[in-house]
Image (cartoon, rainbow, N blue to C red; front, side, top):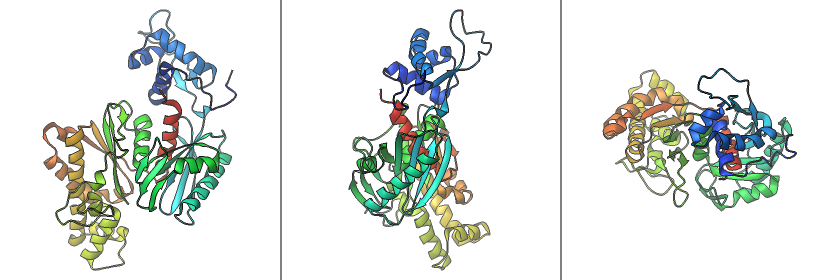
Amino acid sequence: MMASDARDAPIATPAAATVFITVLTRGPMSRVDVARAVDLSGAAVTKAARPLIDAGYLVELPSPHRADAGAGRPANPLAIRADREHFVGIKVTADELIGVVTDLRAQVVTAQHRRLRGRGVDEVVDELAALAAELRDASPVRAHRLGVAVSGDVDRPAGLVRYSPFLDWHNIPLAKLVEDATGLLTTVENDVKALAVAEQWFGQGVGVDSFALVTIGAGIGCALVLGGRLVAGAHGVAGELGHLPVSERREPCHCGASGCLEAVASTAALLTSARAAAGTPTLTIEAAAERARGGDEALRRVFADAGHAIGLGLASVANLFGPERIVVSGEGLAAYDLLEDQIRASFQRQAFGAATRCALVIRPLPFEQWARGAAAVAIHDRFARY
């Protein structure tokens, strides 16, 4: 019989959580394959799975022929019933909210955008609550959990936004404010780390022990997964690639330092350099890219310089942490064709030894994927309690 409340999934032990998450991220899988993947006995997997099947979180698929199934062991693959629960995810930008509802596998069911009336905390919380209500009303299964993704320094366990440069927020207890306004259990996370959780469980990070996610756009962010765990850092700050010094010209950065990668290769920094190179103060980033593609050498050098800086940053990640792959994403990839040659050349020159074998995976993602990342964090906190 299905549980009466979607918040009461029968996950009461570490084994149950491990089995569920394994099937969620890698399934469908037979019990034999689950047992091998997580180093549990077949009996332990069956014991952990049975309440989840009874509650409608897992389903048994028809059994394919398996020569290694073994006598007496169920070979029916286990799969997630993805529509058993839904989750709300909202990405906060400086100008708008991007919201989605997803199923258990973080597949987007519905999406909405909502313009912000202002960047004040009360205004944003009000808009968050209104968007969350609209998304829940549009969902075929009512969600009980909300993930919010915000740029900047976020203390996820405390639900605190310590600093968000685009919103100019300092020490805002956003999770509590949103929970009070929505009645939803709320997780707040840095937007790049949230996107990394989505990649770890449902994307390029599935089955990968270590990877880095780097985003290029309005800011330059980095999240690290090492040993299968998202790196939070002792103070909640880790992987701040955007504030790695890469330039001797010492361009000022909004963080107060100078020469940071973000001050050289973010969209705003690129646009400033492009306008200076072209002598056109009204030039847009799209027009700059078009002119560079058309052969404007001054603008091509601007993009090449940015690519060089990004390549140095990526090499630093490979040298310091040794990930299996670096996934590169973000809205800045719209001009990736102008950056790629220099990124890869600088990466190869600066990466040390075997670190040059670290794969660079280019993964353009629409803005809704940032909101999906927020939902993925809510899914993670829902089931990864052990």
